[in-house]
Image 1 (cartoon, rainbow, N blue to C red):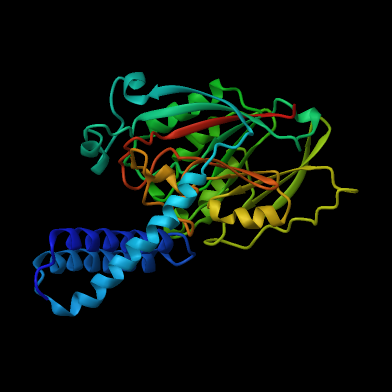
Image 2 (cartoon, rainbow, N blue to C red; image 1 turned 90 degrees about the horizontal axis):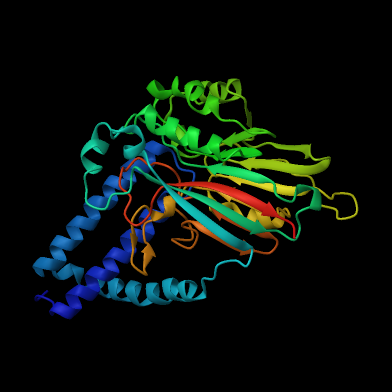
Amino acid sequence: MSRLFDSELLLALAGHFAIVVWLFNRMHAVGWRHATVKKLELALFIFAVSIVCLLWSGRFSALSTYVVVCWLALLLSIPLWLIPKLAERLPTALVSNDTTLLDVRARLGFAPVHGRAAWMARFPGNQLLQIAVQRKTLHLPTLPAALDGLTIAHLSDLHMTGQLGREFYDCIVDETNALAPDVVVITGDILEKEHCLPWIAKTLGRLQARHGKFFILGNHETRLPDIAPLRQALVASGFTDLGGRCQQFTINDTPITLAGTELPWLGTAPPVPDQNPETDSSFRLLLSHSPDQLDWARQHGFHLMLAGHNHGGQIRLPYLGALVTPSLYGSRYSGGLYFAEPTLLHVSRGLAGVHPIRLNCPPELALLVLKSS
């Protein structure tokens, strides 16, 4: 194949990028084993780099068919990305969003980073140690009046690996306690290295909430040789395990149905009772690691769903936003608030990650203030 014209080459490379990102996002959204995903990641990387080299050289005639595929992929990806992008609207449920910045380095007087994070934290613009503490007031017409003003601290994706020191998580706990939440929830990817297990009691064990602390696990906990000690440590630290479970409890004499799903990686869907308006007046709250469970939440009448997993994309480009998000829906639910009748979905940008880089996407600690009027 003769060398492509520059414009044709750039279009082919853009289409190739779209294909690779599409594959990467979806392979991290399904319940495959970690070892399988890592092998596929390596294969995808080799494929991506090899094609770029061959396209740039223009000497491999067999690529002519793939070039056409790339052009078609680019042509298809534009409306698939652009139409949802143009349709994006902040849900009217968001009354206010007051944000303050917690500079962990400034608070501690040093950067609690180790290994790869130690040098990546120096990358210009990296917000790894700048936590956005966001107080979001949400109007939920379905919220019983007795629950008006209920506050939920939503933490997600702590990724305790040792790259961020325990002091980082101590700052998060101190800041959460300063918010004085009624309820604390953690929506998965808490810990994935055994040597960090003693941190649970010393950090998360200090979290305080008037009406309870709840957790589910995510896909990164499957990297542990045994998940049971983590669950036990969290329960011993005062948390309720909602992984694949559903429970009903009361706040201010008002029933709440609280459930958790760790699908597609762990367990089964929680056994949620059918909703009968004549007999079930409870407020329904779902914890899910992946926002991809939104359709399931809608089918079961959940009023509020809290999720994580997508990290806001970690790198957000001006206007384009997130590109790499481990979801079957691409970047549609990368982070923030979304409404699909009858469910309001809050997706946390998370607090850490395996890859210690945050550009235009600071970690998030959210306090959700629920209002019925």
